[in-house]
Image 1: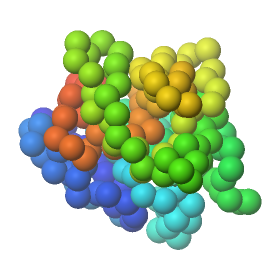
Image 2: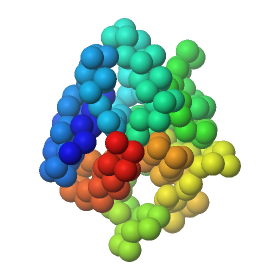
Image 3: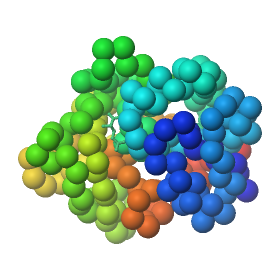
Image 4: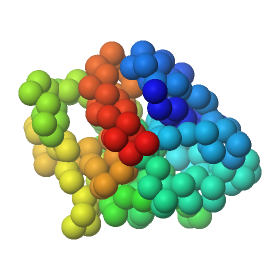
Length: 198
Ligand code: GLN
């Protein structure tokens, strides 16, 4: 079974490790380059994207990670993880850096103060049944490049049409938190992606 690393310097690491372990993969928390070297695939959790890039720089994980993603390591980001994988960020902090990998522009904290956190059921790409999505100070995807596949969009309320899940080749991301709430279908899809690549 594949080894899948979870960026473990910041964020909701345990939930991802738990879901990945239940799916029969070898799930490891990753804080340093030697651990990254063992990974066939990688997840960047929800958390705080500005703290994440700073810690990744401090622990000298930023460049190695960026390199692995560029070389084709299947990578999945949730919420702050989506921001980390976006090529462009709106409303980031002044010097905010991202790893990139997805030809998208995300808006941080896009849903605004009134609706800081909310839940909803979304149609998701090829799944026959809706996905229960939990959003916590979530970004949305404001622009996608030509190679990016849209997997889910908000389908009611003021944010109708906003893109909240994408995939581009070996990189995928959701604005919401599939690691919370017990629905493992998106993780399963990611594990399949890792398995076909390794
Ligand atoms: N608002 C956070 C950020 O900008 C993301 C929130 C989350 O991951 N739940 O990084």
